[in-house]
Amino acid sequence: MAWRRVVVTGMGTVNPIGHSVPEFWSALTEGRSGIRRIARFDPAPFTSQIGGEVQNWETVPDNCAHLVDPREARRMDRFAQFAVAAALDAAKDSGLDFSKLEPHRVGVVTGSGRLPTWPGPWRSWPPTPRATSPARC
Image 1 (cartoon, one colour):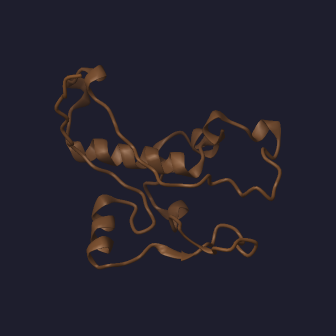
Image 2 (cartoon, one colour):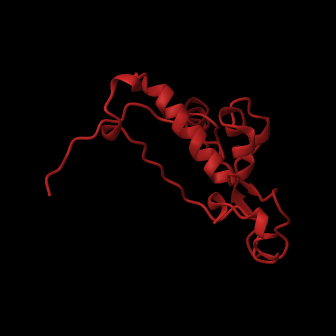
Image 3 (cartoon, one colour):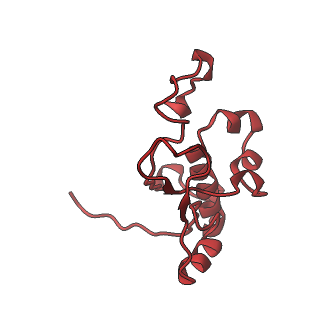
């Protein structure tokens, strides 16, 4: 297989220490940690009660709910919203004029180190058949 060149033209991130690349880089160089006691659910039943959660996502002006149709955003799991926001930031950061590019030669690479963001195994899943969407499976 022949190796092909890849060019990184833009970056985006949503993570426990930043909702954008500049915010993330600033926190990283200052040595701030995003690990703290879990707040999205009661971690008492678990041995470990700490984790790296994205904080204040709902109050971020450019979170996914503001970038896509609000109905679609409600159907997306939280991690998918992070991915969409980061990908859109990366596209904006690239400065590329996508209308002048061949669509099959442009792509986004995402990475995630995460556990599912649903409430947990101690509840029945899915809560109802209507609550299931492809983004939550």
